[in-house]
Length: 295
Length: 189
Image (tube, rainbow over all chains, first blue to last red; front, side, top):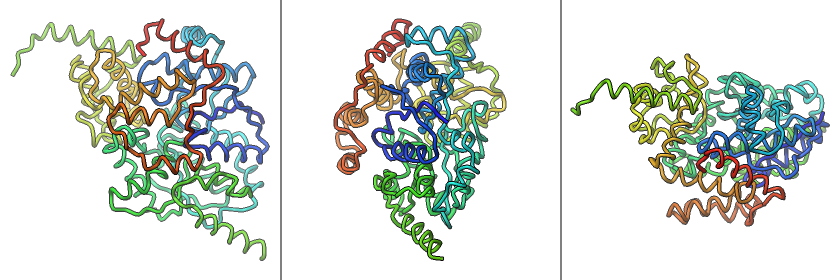
């Protein structure tokens, strides 16, 4: 299995551990990722608020490079995925738009190369059974709420999962030996850049999600978006202080949980880059694995 | 109460509706005002007008009121409204289009949010990728809030999560050309 790989800007900065864990996990699963050489920013989330054509043209350049190679593109970041998917569909559905975009990017893009969410690739192309057979350190007794965020499964017509009650990440957690915990905030928006540009609006949105996750009794949150991660992890103490809460709720990229379950050393997955301490969870999983090994 | 000349107001309203329909590809007239968009909107608590009210203003052609609202800027583009609309109206796309029109007309109710997006795109045009540290520093300086979130800086740098210098891609001429070509076609960037 081979895909073009589009990490996007956040994965080389604030979300660097998402990039690290994606590459490690893909390798361990036998999936080849060909990083698009000299890829450019997809414009999320500023281009589509400024100019529609620019919003389609920026992702189109990356998709065109993948198309030249005859590869679909695996995309970890939910926001990048949404912008790339919107471009792919608009180009494929309109000959006029295809010609306009190709003229603007000065490359050919026909919409043949598809934008795929990394979660979709793992769960639906490789499959849960295959993943399950490779697990050697199950996420035993780990209760996880899956936070898909707003963009991963929308719009519904283009999505790979249910837009209101998605299941793929929950099923993945189960395949990794963990316990998925149901909750009502799977696709609730975290406010994205609002926490930076207008915190009086962004912070209450983050607070609602963290409070809901805490109330389920889950041990941690799994996410698929670097901006969600920043808001829930980096800003967790800041938001907690504002609302008089101490959440102490670790947040993982789903790829990190996969890596741990596949037996990769957690430190190699970049988990020390988190803001909320995850060592308690890692210790708990190690102890469970140790008990199993000695049993 | 201000007097309105109905025939002229109606004609102007139809022009406005046509403009939004053309730019967004969305027929706002399909909205039957059920309010499901506003019930589910995660940002509605902070809006001066609900998404449903914005749709009504567009239907009536009361463009100035829609363009001056904070709502169109506070919309987080999460698509909850569009996902749930029983009439399949892409409300988020209408919000996006209204922001673009508002910016073109110089009517920006949330200047800092707008500044962020301008700086973001400037970074993409200059480097091919967004330079997050540069973006945040620029946003703080131009937004007159130099120390906002500054306490995250040292640990972000230590964790290797922020690069002091931008990563400029080799083929950046291609990205600059994309911006130039969009401008040639009338894009106001």
